[in-house]
Image (cartoon, helix red, strand yellow):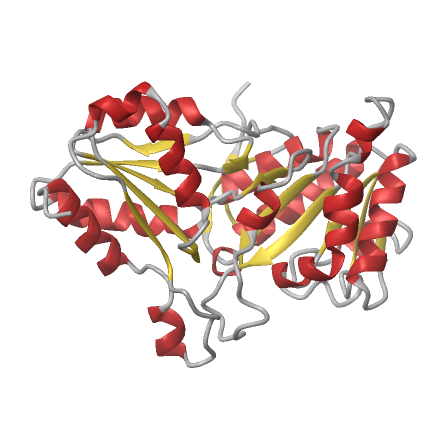
Length: 332
């Protein structure tokens, strides 16, 4: 039987995934600041409180540490909480529960327990929210064994990966770029999953591999389309999962193209691009490289409030075009 596919926004896809999860499993419930009647800081939870009631769509006090602690504790008792942070930056207030509790409980108790908690983080710049509400901290959490960290880039993937996250026995951190919430794309009806830990080749190419994350996937695809007119054929990989990273897809692509450009919004230093580069450098793909690996990440500054400065701190399409062109032509 064919599955109906509609156009949904990224936010609508998340809301639909949460509704499906709650309908199918009474252990699933939502937590977060202002997610009830207000519908969430970015209106993602919408009317779910009216559909499922305040006992399953719970407004929490303004305490990320406290809310995350309740979510982790609930997961340890067998429930499956989905905890929404208003901004990914506020993960810093809950690092004790995320890093020292959720990530380590299964290991410290010899596998006798699991922590099936999902935490959602609206992330990234572009909304004029300035330095304390615009960061991309996925590399922080990706550094921690015991956590799974994902960055879906499309409405299709965010629905499928969220449903996969709810079913996962381990804590899953979902970074949702704020500028993607209104982006629309095809989303099948009903329940389906997109595997955690598997990258997606969004565009086939022969001259250069771009590995990108989150909103940078779309910018990389736009850059690739522009460079095609110059005869430069670019392969674009949507990483999708920061941890566990799909190393083989990256290695196979670099063996084919012999060049690698890593594009991500977070600060360049010690970012995702460094790990991607190391994956290639430590594999047999290194012998296939015809040029040094290039990282294109965010500037070494907090995100400014000024819109022009804000835009200048993270890679834009012209930056990707310039870096890819130089790399493809041997100028880097």
